[in-house]
Length: 342
Ligand code: PEP
Ligand code: MN
Image 1: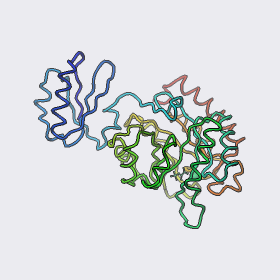
Image 2: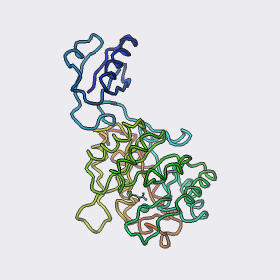
Image 3: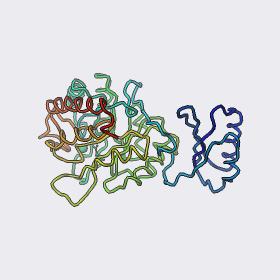
Image 4: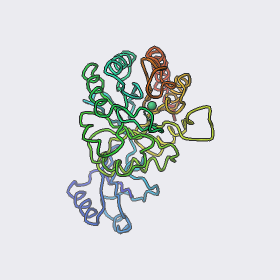
């Protein structure tokens, strides 16, 4: 439920209204928008007397939110959310475009440092690298685990790039204390225990779309994290499973403008897992930029044919350099005429 509060309302009166709602077992969220205060009310709102609420002198209007997701919805917060990553210099969303790049998996100290330096010089603002890897086969490389996180932290110290890496279960989270952003992978999008746990952190979460998830299910997963108190959620479209077999997944770019309408959260696109082939990564990265994505996450490896994971979809540092340049050109057109994305 959303109540628009009249401008110039006495803060003490508003405070007593939120207190009353909280006593009914509801959660309240206040947002400022163009001089108005928006009061979001979440929980079993059947307990609220609509006539009474609408009749209050401080209340301009009241409406129920029909979607099951609330905190991430545009209704609750009309303005785009910008999320700071790391020490605050890197932002995603709200007009800030972010390039995330790095290998699928951290393999060696030399590899991650070399790739980190290369992607930084090509313009990447965040370094990615998997330490805990969700692999389809138990016989494939499972990641370096805690050692991989240490190597990422070293790459961060060397380059100054904030880092993102995936957590697969709540027990791993103590190892992520110095990690700047935690990835929840496609396979764990509906791991509710993990979502609840990262909802207690004060750290940005990149929530990938599940392999077969609808946009509504995906937003409900974001809602799990936000309702736990962590509102720093970035959505990541990484392709969904369809009947097509030439590509690893099918990149659903319509999710970008659709989610922009439904939600204020930033959305980035991962063209690497979406396509599975390095020659498709550039074109899809440009298309994602053109349709209004707030950023991209691209796999880059110093030696793709010998990568321990996802070599076929990994760009070389040189290829990434050229793609990043084209992304900047497309981005310049998009921001010159933002009507392109509307
Ligand atoms: C990854 O980013 O390395 C990864 C495993 O991605 P996804 O969860 O999208 O498959
Ligand atoms: Mn990968």
